[in-house]
Amino acid sequence: MTPESTPEGSSSGHMEWYVLKIQSNREKTIRDSLLRRMRQEGLQDFFGEIVIPTEKIVENRNGKKRVIEQKLYPGYLMIQMVLNDDTWYLVRSTSGVGDFTGSSGKPSPMPVHEIHRMLGAGQSVVEEPAKVKHDLKAGDSVKIIEGPFASFDGSVGSVDASSGKLTVMIEIFGRSTPVDVEAWQVERV
Image (cartoon, rainbow, N blue to C red; front, side, top):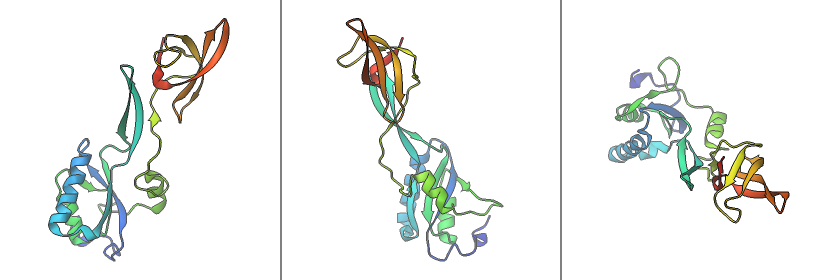
């Protein structure tokens, strides 16, 4: 594709969202490179946000709870921009950028409903609770490793996937008693 074959109407001055195919595992460095080149070329007015869609996941490693960011679409970047000859060339000539997504070699703007879905209800930066990564399900045998019930064995009664909380059935004084714990406070037996 050449800059002359940009889609009609895209140089009208309003920003639209595009998806770029980029080298995987270089999303942040490519985003930083694009931002630096925009400033150097004085084209920042033609660009909006550059987003790497991610979600926060809570992992339990070696008994320690830690939050990591996981890319939702590795090898892709979302960019808000006015598509014209200068902006097209700046993006395409940036190291690590493969191409715009679209049919017939022409960049296609993302439909608004898709942007809302991918970015979370229309916000580019969504501050939501981290999802807890675990593979426990009701009926699994576990040992509580931290908290007031540490060293108790029990079975998972229920799992709240959104909050990462478990109800574990433990035996206290000969009675089965439900206790609520975080997923990272137990280990599978």
